[in-house]
Length: 386
Image (cartoon, rainbow, N blue to C red):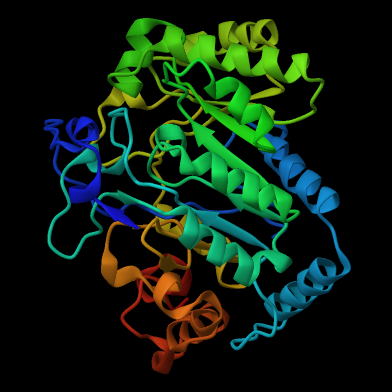
């Protein structure tokens, strides 16, 4: 882990406090999932076709990286989920790993406006390649996929490419998400050569006005030029990967660009474009952030969440850049939400510790008061007594 004080001075302006003129929002409603449980979709698409595109990525990784050991673990994990086991003999088959929470952009509402951390919150920093390597060595034999991104820009630091190469050599599919705001002419080639399986292109507006309103200080022309170069480099070396998935968050001020974005996606040659619901605090957002496709929710989101199922404690986990392990990607800033630290304790001892077992008991029986430890899971709507 590399803390802020060890980061190059040229990057420190990125981390300066930014006054976005809005109240600080530290916790957001958790994202919910479709049924059946196999549709582990972390974003809300316009329709089922949009959502199914994510499932296709998961299935591709499943089939491409299948081994007997992974298959046996997969069935054991699904059996444990079905039977509501609390102490597991299986391990997660998908990890979300954050290489860094530092970003070069100031997108609206993201990570609470990129403000400086408060007491009890996670500092800014980045994961070392050595720590990543040790984690993959411990659990990689069970993984079909690693989502190598969190609340920062993965390609801001060169070790991210080393992480992708290492995981790829160990038969693990890697996906990452990038705003592609870089002036490194070698980066498109390096991305293709790294073995990256999926590149999520985060780009939310075709005009400078709409792009700037969503993505702050980003350069849309630079981002489009870079993603075009990745497509060209992939064609040049006759590679099938990375699959390029343009993610377009739909708001009231950019929804008129949907048709043009589809045309632009075909012109560039990206593999797919998804129009999804952005994640922002509805209580404080201006009306222009709500689109016709995703209007302000009149219903209580807690009731919506209560109808869904949580599969994270059986199938996946989120690991912050500093090794802090939390059961999902909600409220990653608060250090108290960590179930343990994989760089200090190892992954396996945490996976079945007291907090994890209590979380699984709560999902099976929200009325179980003995399982109500003071954890992120005990505060989640999915574990509230019905």
